[in-house]
Image 1 (cartoon, one colour):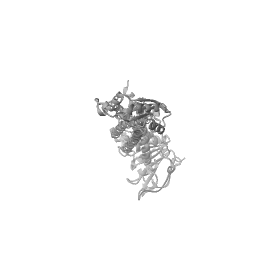
Image 2 (cartoon, rainbow over the protein chains, first blue to last red; image 1 turned 180 degrees about the horizontal axis):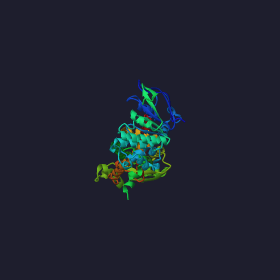
Image 3 (cartoon, rainbow over the protein chains, first blue to last red; image 1 turned 90 degrees about the vertical axis):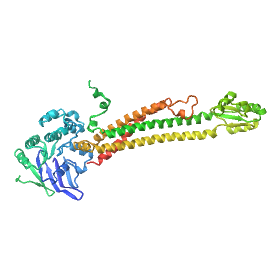
Amino acid sequence: MRVIELTNVSYGYGDTELLSDVSLHIQPGSFHFLTGPSGSGKTTFLRLCYLDLLATAGQITVFGKQVAEMTRDEVAFTRRRIGVVHQDCQFLDHLPLSQNVTLPLEVADRADEDENLGELLTWVGLADRKSALPPQLSGGERQRAALARAIIMSPDFVIADEPTGNVDWEMSQRLLSLLIELNKMGKTILIATHDLNLIRVAKSQVAARVLRIRDKQLQLAGADL
Amino acid sequence: MDFKRWSLQAVLETRADKVVPPSGYTARLTLFTSAAMAFLAVFALALSLATGRLADHWSSELSRTATVRISAPAGQLAAQTKAALEVLQTTPGVKSARVLDEADERALLEPWFGKDLPLDALPIPKLIEVIEDDAGIDANGLRLRLQGEAPGAIFDDHTRWRQPLVHAADRLRLLGIAAIVLITATTGAMITLAASSALAANSRVIRVLRLVGARDVYVVRAFVRQFTLRAFVGALVGMAVGGLSMATLPSAGDTSGFLSGMGLQGTDWLWLLLIPPLAALVAFVATRIVAFRTLKELT
């Protein structure tokens, strides 16, 4: 079963169309990059993938179920299978890092399954920051915490929107290696980035497809990257 | 020992509640509204119960009493009184009939004319107090017999002045109930506004919760619990203050009239215990409705 399938999908606000007639399918265990200039619609595309937006035309199927036909509860259950690293991290600032990371478990009534939290925070290098509030974290720490939250439910599909946007090159590579490691564990990865160097580094380590949004259309990028 | 862990808030608060940050403004608004409404509800309840009690009293106890008033020339007064008494004693439905003596008449007139009333110098009619049994008296038949035996005797079964009073008391009871309904509705409206405000203030929190896979019912539960708890605590305080105010109402002693009967009596106090759960129920329903409606507008 495909993780996600978009068929002739369009999306726009009012009269402005951001994406037009986009078709794509993503197989389980694959690794995709999504690139394109700022404002090209990368975030919009990702939001369609994690059901935060509804397509204005076309059909999106996630884990074999059409998004347009999902009930609100089904949307929630589907989101639990998708881990998302948001560009702005989307933390709850009044909760410490550890509770932000375990939030997906909490809302799924699986709060007692957080026994791997310590190991996970160690894996992302934040074991000593678990009591810190989000505003007290640096850009890199926030991105790593967001990654930890995205994968704590062991999702089938991980989506990252510019995960290296606010961090230096060393931290970018560290985050990338975490995502590659997840892919090697069988997770499907989709990363939106405009950092071509990052894509080049990733392609040397994993079989990644590169998608590009240009003129509202989704294209498979060539080897010129 | 970690006492904080066992505080009321900690015991009642679930993990889901902690996800929604406490909002001081809406929390205070809900607490104050619930307390104020519960305070008013105590008085509305007291009004309703007291007037109900008065209406019942007037319509049941007073309906079993009547008066025969004998106005006759001084020379005939004793004879007509005796004749009227004999008629009453042979009338079906009369449990007892007693001629009021001078002390009784003085007690009746004292509130209007003072203590030194010269009863002998006044043309005061003789009064016979009649107590009916459960079968009741045929008032028209009795009037006809009295007309024949004691022409100066007038039978007064109090209907003329009792009925308007019973109607007034019934109307006041309805007004009390209407006030309780209005207070309940106002509480619901205020909590709806406060919950809407809290939902709007926490729209980012709700968005994050939805993005990480929270079902609507999870988000709603967090808000509903907070508002239900606040409404309950506020109403508890309002009820306590209102109850204390009722308990300290000055007593009119033996001259118990309408106002002194306004307090709560006996089992009436138990009705107050319904106010906090009712406020909590109103908050529960109001918050649940507004929360689900707000969430449906989100993706």
